[in-house]
Amino acid sequence: MDDLKNLVRTIPDYPKPGILFRDATTLFGHAQGFKAAVAQLTEPYRTQRIDAVAAIEARGFIIGGAVADRLGCGFVPIRKRGKLPWRTLSQEYALEYGTDVVEVHTDAIGQGARILIVDDLIATGGTAEAAVKLIRRSGGEVAGAAFLIDLPELGGVARLKSLGIAPHALMAFEGH
Ligand code: AMP
Image 1 (cartoon, rainbow, N blue to C red):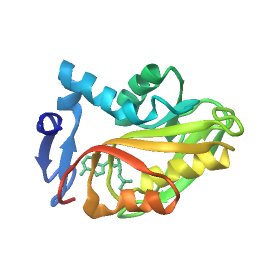
Image 2: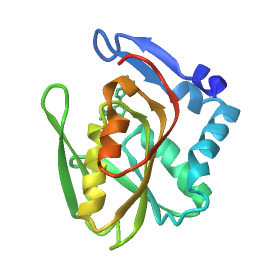
Image 3: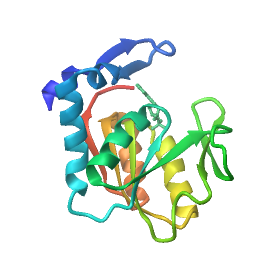
């Protein structure tokens, strides 16, 4: 676990002063690290019925596709507003300043489909909560949520637990 943590690069004051940006691209670029991270993210779900991985643009796609392949299930992209070509459901969520919107295709998730959410990092959990709402509004069931990195001080894991989801994260970093 420490080995994987050491592969994440920390960039101070990006994208703005006071933020410690946890850059997973250095882990993605490391063959053994990437393979181990995908295997560990997948592990808790190997014995469960998962119909699709729903991953969040953009870094979530990198690991989400690999996890879906390992589980032998489908992949559903959750994208920022205006990127998906077919009819969509939209979900607004709060940012530190202002709001943003994520979308999913209206026909991507069938009634009762068991969906695993995947993203690189959970901070406040606002993005993941928007994904939960899109999946539930589509008729799907959130079977779990898997992240490489948790920032516990920002409360995202607690927020998902309050929605009845048990998140899985491979590592945690202090601070924001
Ligand atoms: P949140 O909605 O607050 O849980 O933020 C999660 C999203 O923002 C994820 O898609 C992350 O990629 C990105 N993010 C938030 N904080 C950081 C950080 N300190 N380092 C890297 N990415 C971050």
